[in-house]
Length: 257
Image (cartoon, rainbow, N blue to C red; front, side, top):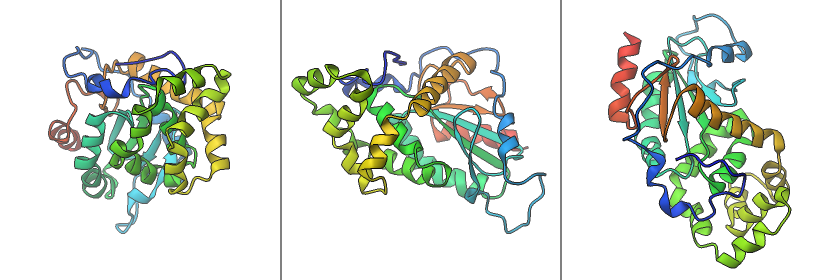
Protein backbone atom coordinates (compact mmCIF):
# COMPACT_ATOMS: atom_id res chain seq x y z
CA UNK A 1 0.00 0.00 0.00
CA UNK A 2 1.34 3.45 -0.90
CA UNK A 3 -0.08 6.63 0.66
CA UNK A 4 0.82 10.05 -0.68
CA UNK A 5 -1.36 12.73 0.91
CA UNK A 6 1.31 14.49 2.99
CA UNK A 7 3.27 14.23 6.23
CA UNK A 8 0.30 13.65 8.55
CA UNK A 9 -1.56 11.27 6.29
CA UNK A 10 -2.42 7.90 7.74
CA UNK A 11 -2.83 8.75 11.45
CA UNK A 12 -5.31 5.90 11.75
CA UNK A 13 -3.50 3.51 9.45
CA UNK A 14 -1.21 1.70 11.91
CA UNK A 15 -3.84 -0.88 12.71
CA UNK A 16 -4.15 -1.87 9.05
CA UNK A 17 -0.61 -2.51 7.87
CA UNK A 18 -1.15 -6.03 6.55
CA UNK A 19 -0.79 -4.68 3.01
CA UNK A 20 2.80 -3.63 3.70
CA UNK A 21 3.98 -6.95 2.33
CA UNK A 22 1.79 -7.34 -0.73
CA UNK A 23 2.59 -10.88 -1.84
CA UNK A 24 -0.26 -11.04 -4.33
CA UNK A 25 0.52 -8.03 -6.52
CA UNK A 26 2.13 -8.69 -9.87
CA UNK A 27 5.80 -7.76 -10.12
CA UNK A 28 7.34 -6.28 -13.30
CA UNK A 29 8.45 -8.66 -16.04
CA UNK A 30 11.29 -6.35 -17.07
CA UNK A 31 14.02 -5.74 -14.48
CA UNK A 32 14.30 -2.18 -13.25
CA UNK A 33 17.32 -0.11 -14.19
CA UNK A 34 20.25 -0.01 -11.74
CA UNK A 35 20.43 3.38 -10.04
CA UNK A 36 22.88 2.30 -7.34
CA UNK A 37 26.04 2.54 -9.43
CA UNK A 38 26.38 6.29 -8.94
CA UNK A 39 26.78 5.75 -5.21
CA UNK A 40 30.35 4.55 -5.69
CA UNK A 41 31.36 8.11 -6.62
CA UNK A 42 31.20 9.21 -2.99
CA UNK A 43 32.90 6.14 -1.52
CA UNK A 44 35.98 6.93 0.56
CA UNK A 45 38.13 4.38 -1.24
CA UNK A 46 38.55 3.03 -4.76
CA UNK A 47 39.28 -0.27 -6.45
CA UNK A 48 38.05 -3.72 -5.51
CA UNK A 49 41.06 -4.91 -3.55
CA UNK A 50 41.26 -4.40 0.20
CA UNK A 51 43.32 -5.82 3.04
CA UNK A 52 42.05 -9.17 4.28
CA UNK A 53 41.38 -7.58 7.68
CA UNK A 54 38.93 -5.02 6.27
CA UNK A 55 35.49 -5.26 7.86
CA UNK A 56 33.24 -3.61 5.32
CA UNK A 57 30.33 -3.31 7.77
CA UNK A 58 32.19 -0.32 9.21
CA UNK A 59 31.98 1.56 5.89
CA UNK A 60 28.64 3.38 5.72
CA UNK A 61 27.85 6.22 3.31
CA UNK A 62 24.85 8.19 2.08
CA UNK A 63 24.03 7.51 -1.56
CA UNK A 64 22.94 10.11 -4.12
CA UNK A 65 19.56 8.36 -4.39
CA UNK A 66 18.84 9.01 -0.70
CA UNK A 67 19.70 5.69 0.91
CA UNK A 68 22.43 4.60 3.28
CA UNK A 69 24.82 1.92 2.06
CA UNK A 70 26.92 -0.40 4.16
CA UNK A 71 29.88 -2.21 2.62
CA UNK A 72 32.28 -2.28 -0.28
CA UNK A 73 31.13 0.21 -2.95
CA UNK A 74 32.62 -2.10 -5.58
CA UNK A 75 31.07 -5.30 -4.25
CA UNK A 76 30.16 -7.93 -6.82
CA UNK A 77 26.60 -8.01 -5.51
CA UNK A 78 24.68 -4.86 -4.61
CA UNK A 79 21.64 -5.54 -2.46
CA UNK A 80 19.07 -2.76 -2.14
CA UNK A 81 16.13 -2.92 0.24
CA UNK A 82 13.09 -0.65 0.36
CA UNK A 83 11.22 -0.95 3.65
CA UNK A 84 8.83 0.81 6.01
CA UNK A 85 9.55 1.32 9.70
CA UNK A 86 5.90 0.57 10.56
CA UNK A 87 5.71 -2.61 8.47
CA UNK A 88 5.56 -5.82 10.57
CA UNK A 89 6.96 -7.90 7.69
CA UNK A 90 9.97 -5.57 7.52
CA UNK A 91 10.49 -5.87 11.26
CA UNK A 92 10.45 -9.67 10.98
CA UNK A 93 12.90 -9.63 8.08
CA UNK A 94 15.39 -7.46 9.94
CA UNK A 95 15.16 -9.56 13.10
CA UNK A 96 15.86 -12.70 11.13
CA UNK A 97 18.30 -11.56 8.47
CA UNK A 98 20.26 -8.39 9.14
CA UNK A 99 23.06 -9.83 11.27
CA UNK A 100 23.57 -12.66 8.78
CA UNK A 101 23.65 -10.21 5.88
CA UNK A 102 26.29 -8.17 7.70
CA UNK A 103 28.54 -10.96 8.98
CA UNK A 104 28.20 -13.51 6.18
CA UNK A 105 27.98 -11.27 3.12
CA UNK A 106 28.84 -7.60 3.74
CA UNK A 107 31.85 -7.92 6.05
CA UNK A 108 33.92 -9.75 3.43
CA UNK A 109 33.26 -7.13 0.76
CA UNK A 110 31.35 -9.50 -1.51
CA UNK A 111 27.97 -7.80 -0.99
CA UNK A 112 27.01 -4.20 -0.28
CA UNK A 113 23.70 -3.48 1.43
CA UNK A 114 21.72 -0.29 0.93
CA UNK A 115 18.54 0.69 2.76
CA UNK A 116 16.02 3.16 1.37
CA UNK A 117 12.84 4.16 3.18
CA UNK A 118 9.51 3.39 1.54
CA UNK A 119 7.20 5.49 3.71
CA UNK A 120 3.65 4.20 4.17
CA UNK A 121 2.00 6.57 6.68
CA UNK A 122 2.48 9.58 8.95
CA UNK A 123 4.13 7.75 11.88
CA UNK A 124 6.49 6.08 9.42
CA UNK A 125 7.34 9.49 7.97
CA UNK A 126 8.26 10.91 11.38
CA UNK A 127 10.30 7.88 12.42
CA UNK A 128 12.12 7.78 9.08
CA UNK A 129 13.13 11.44 9.36
CA UNK A 130 14.51 10.80 12.85
CA UNK A 131 16.36 7.63 11.92
CA UNK A 132 18.06 9.43 9.04
CA UNK A 133 18.80 12.83 10.54
CA UNK A 134 22.04 11.91 12.34
CA UNK A 135 23.67 10.89 9.07
CA UNK A 136 25.37 7.67 7.90
CA UNK A 137 27.41 6.60 10.94
CA UNK A 138 24.55 6.00 13.43
CA UNK A 139 21.88 5.20 10.85
CA UNK A 140 21.91 1.41 10.94
CA UNK A 141 21.93 1.39 14.74
CA UNK A 142 18.88 3.65 14.84
CA UNK A 143 17.22 1.58 12.12
CA UNK A 144 17.70 -1.57 14.19
CA UNK A 145 16.17 0.16 17.23
CA UNK A 146 13.10 1.33 15.34
CA UNK A 147 12.46 -2.15 13.95
CA UNK A 148 13.20 -3.95 17.23
CA UNK A 149 10.95 -1.60 19.23
CA UNK A 150 8.25 -1.19 16.58
CA UNK A 151 5.47 -2.42 18.87
CA UNK A 152 6.64 0.00 21.57
CA UNK A 153 7.02 3.33 19.75
CA UNK A 154 3.94 2.89 17.54
CA UNK A 155 1.61 2.52 20.53
CA UNK A 156 1.34 6.27 20.99
CA UNK A 157 0.17 6.72 17.41
CA UNK A 158 -2.36 3.90 17.62
CA UNK A 159 -3.80 5.29 20.86
CA UNK A 160 -4.07 8.85 19.55
CA UNK A 161 -7.56 10.21 20.17
CA UNK A 162 -9.85 11.79 17.62
CA UNK A 163 -9.49 15.07 19.51
CA UNK A 164 -5.70 14.88 19.17
CA UNK A 165 -5.99 14.16 15.47
CA UNK A 166 -8.36 17.09 14.96
CA UNK A 167 -6.05 19.40 16.94
CA UNK A 168 -3.03 18.37 14.86
CA UNK A 169 -4.87 18.69 11.57
CA UNK A 170 -5.91 22.25 12.49
CA UNK A 171 -2.26 23.32 12.83
CA UNK A 172 -0.27 24.83 9.94
CA UNK A 173 1.04 21.98 7.81
CA UNK A 174 4.68 22.64 8.68
CA UNK A 175 3.87 22.09 12.38
CA UNK A 176 1.74 18.97 12.06
CA UNK A 177 4.42 16.31 11.90
CA UNK A 178 6.24 17.51 15.02
CA UNK A 179 2.94 17.80 16.89
CA UNK A 180 1.91 14.30 15.88
CA UNK A 181 5.27 12.79 16.87
CA UNK A 182 5.29 14.67 20.19
CA UNK A 183 1.74 13.61 21.04
CA UNK A 184 2.76 9.99 20.40
CA UNK A 185 5.89 10.53 22.58
CA UNK A 186 8.26 9.72 19.76
CA UNK A 187 10.41 12.61 20.99
CA UNK A 188 10.92 10.74 24.27
CA UNK A 189 11.82 7.54 22.44
CA UNK A 190 14.56 9.17 20.37
CA UNK A 191 15.86 11.30 23.26
CA UNK A 192 16.91 8.07 24.94
CA UNK A 193 18.82 7.22 21.76
CA UNK A 194 20.87 10.39 21.47
CA UNK A 195 18.50 12.84 19.78
CA UNK A 196 17.68 15.77 22.12
CA UNK A 197 14.55 17.89 21.77
CA UNK A 198 16.18 20.63 19.69
CA UNK A 199 17.55 18.06 17.25
CA UNK A 200 14.18 16.29 17.17
CA UNK A 201 12.44 19.50 16.14
CA UNK A 202 15.02 20.23 13.46
CA UNK A 203 14.81 16.70 12.06
CA UNK A 204 11.04 16.53 11.70
CA UNK A 205 10.98 19.99 10.10
CA UNK A 206 13.75 19.28 7.59
CA UNK A 207 12.21 19.99 4.17
CA UNK A 208 15.13 18.53 2.21
CA UNK A 209 14.85 15.23 4.07
CA UNK A 210 11.08 15.24 3.55
CA UNK A 211 11.62 15.65 -0.19
CA UNK A 212 14.19 12.85 -0.19
CA UNK A 213 11.74 10.47 1.47
CA UNK A 214 9.07 11.36 -1.07
CA UNK A 215 11.49 10.80 -3.95
CA UNK A 216 12.49 7.39 -2.61
CA UNK A 217 8.85 6.37 -2.52
CA UNK A 218 8.62 7.35 -6.18
CA UNK A 219 11.76 5.33 -6.94
CA UNK A 220 10.21 2.30 -5.27
CA UNK A 221 6.99 2.40 -7.25
CA UNK A 222 8.03 3.88 -10.58
CA UNK A 223 11.64 2.78 -11.08
CA UNK A 224 11.52 -0.60 -9.36
CA UNK A 225 7.77 -1.30 -9.64
CA UNK A 226 7.46 -2.33 -6.00
CA UNK A 227 3.95 -2.78 -4.64
CA UNK A 228 4.71 -3.48 -0.99
CA UNK A 229 7.39 -3.76 1.64
CA UNK A 230 9.94 -5.12 2.12
CA UNK A 231 11.14 -5.03 -1.48
CA UNK A 232 14.53 -6.15 -2.74
CA UNK A 233 16.70 -5.31 -5.73
CA UNK A 234 19.89 -7.24 -6.58
CA UNK A 235 22.31 -5.60 -9.00
CA UNK A 236 19.50 -3.43 -10.34
CA UNK A 237 16.98 -6.22 -10.82
CA UNK A 238 13.77 -6.23 -8.79
CA UNK A 239 13.28 -9.58 -7.07
CA UNK A 240 9.79 -10.77 -7.85
CA UNK A 241 7.75 -12.29 -5.00
CA UNK A 242 10.68 -12.09 -2.57
CA UNK A 243 9.69 -10.86 0.90
CA UNK A 244 11.55 -13.12 3.33
CA UNK A 245 15.14 -14.10 4.09
CA UNK A 246 14.40 -17.69 3.08
CA UNK A 247 13.46 -16.42 -0.37
CA UNK A 248 16.18 -13.78 -0.64
CA UNK A 249 19.32 -15.65 0.46
CA UNK A 250 19.31 -18.11 -2.48
CA UNK A 251 19.08 -15.12 -4.82
CA UNK A 252 22.17 -13.57 -3.19
CA UNK A 253 24.08 -16.83 -3.42
CA UNK A 254 23.19 -17.20 -7.08
CA UNK A 255 24.37 -13.68 -7.81
CA UNK A 256 27.71 -14.40 -6.09
CA UNK A 257 28.50 -17.42 -8.27
